[in-house]
Image (cartoon, rainbow, N blue to C red; front, side, top):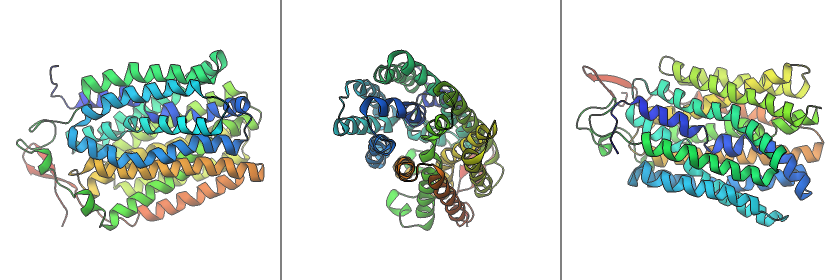
Length: 414
């Protein structure tokens, strides 16, 4: 297969592959699948939320290992067979009997396989290819999640209405294999020495940064890990309940799913906006504004009428779009690129743990209170904690620094 040298091809691969990453395929469709699964299985909302969230919670622990594997064996050697496994596990969901235990086991297998289709592989490749334009490149590539968030839930709702929720999972599996596999095979790889925005002769082992063990001994590592956990607890966790909340308020499943499509559109806009700004403005300032905005979104979802809940959905999407960009960017600026895959896997594990716990708690609190208001209050508090934490990081440790005319390299700050 001929190699490409233009770094923007890896961004193209990111847009295409992330269109069917685990976010649009599993997380953003969980609210669409929730009520059909409840009706078929005879479960309460908390039980169904537990079954879906348990798999994501347990699978999150495999992410650091996956990142270490990509650091050691290259992205394609790990991602390509993993994509096949993810597609196959989605198809297996169609075989679920009316058993909470079996459904939870298959859900866990599906989420475990989906870790290869987190942004890990794509952001690892892009961060290695880019430095000066890293934020922009990440924002464009991760916009693929926004496109998927707009379209995939609509397709899932159509598949469920036409064929049932079991066949809908099979069709989503086919989409993953048909779209993600060729995208990674053609365009997603690490740069060779001299390619992209890295000095000629620089090897992966020479990249600036800390090992995973060294990083874990620093304050920025734990501040970032906690930050991503709390934002995911609030935004990723509640995103799985937006469609049920809207249908509870009288919207049809189709109308609620269409409204949730604004979530995907706003995450797309949030990622592009964040990607453009973080190359120019200190990232913690951007995060502060865009993570406080969803608190107003929660209020609109809770009490708004007419078009106001739709505005609330948009504010949630903008906030979540900011976080996924920042995981890769902040890692590269505070801990460096030397062990990017392993550390990103740890951070995305925290992201997954927060999201799965938030999804379960929202369903559980709804069963207790008969309303989503307690969950919305808790999510708002989690966002405030995240903003406080990210503003304690201080200046970048590995900012962009021009060392050779025309070549940009990240160097530790002094």
